[in-house]
Image (cartoon, rainbow, N blue to C red):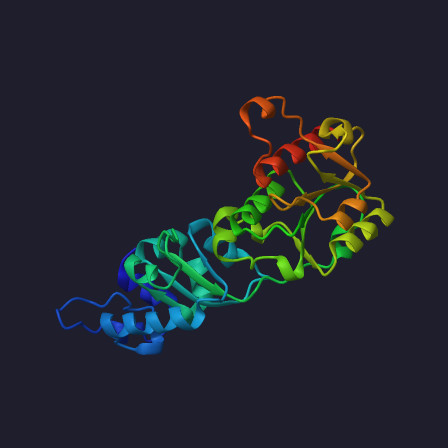
Length: 297
C-alpha cells in the first residue's frame, strides 16, 4: 500500500504532514503525526524521549500478537500507538483507523528508545489504559471447567505463560491478588501472545478467602505442592469443576492458602533424586496440572 493511500485512509489533513526534512527526505512520522504537523525526524525523536521518561511505568505493550489482540479488544482503551510503516501495513487500516490522531509512524530504532531494554517490539508499541478485571461471580457460574489461581506469582514472564496455558486448555479465568499482580502489559502480554485479551482475569484482595468462596459454589480446589501425598492423576479423577492453585517458585503456596485447599497434589518426578532437579518452573508445572485436569474430565 502506498504512503499516499495510507494517509488518506487514516484521517484528514495528512497531506500537510509531507514536509521534507533538511536532507530532502520525508520524515519518518509523515502522515501519522497530526499533533506535530510537518515535524522533522529530530524533533519527534526528542518527543519520543520525553514520552519514554514520562510513561516508563505505564501500560506499554509491544510485539505483533500482543498489539493486534489489544487493538481488537473492545475492553481496552488506547492512548497512543507507535508503529513502523511495515507493521502498519501488516495490521491494516481496519485496526488502525479508530486510533485517528493517536497513531504515529516511527523507525524501529526510535521505538526501541521508548521501551525497556531488550523489548522485541517488531515495529509496534501501544500505550493503553489498564485492562478492566472481571468480577468473580461472572466466571464461577456454572461450576464447570477450570480456573487457575496464582498465589503471589509476580514474574511477568511466568504470568504471561499462565495466560497462554489458560487459553490452550480452555480455562475459565486466571485469578490473581491485587497487590502482587504485575500489570497486564509489557512482558506479560508479549509472552501471552494475545491471550491476555481473551482469557478473563479476576483480581482479589485475599486468595485464601476467595478459595473458600469458590468451594461454596461447587468448585474443588487443588493446590500444587511437592510434598503432597497424592499425584495430580489421582487428584483429578472425575474432574468437573476444578480450581488449580499455583504458588511462587521457591516458597510455594502460603500456609493459609494451603489450608484452604480441598487437596494438595504433586507431580511425580522419579528422576529428581538422581538429577538434582527437585522442582519445575511454575509455568511448566501448571501445564502438567492443566493437562491432568482436562484428561480427568
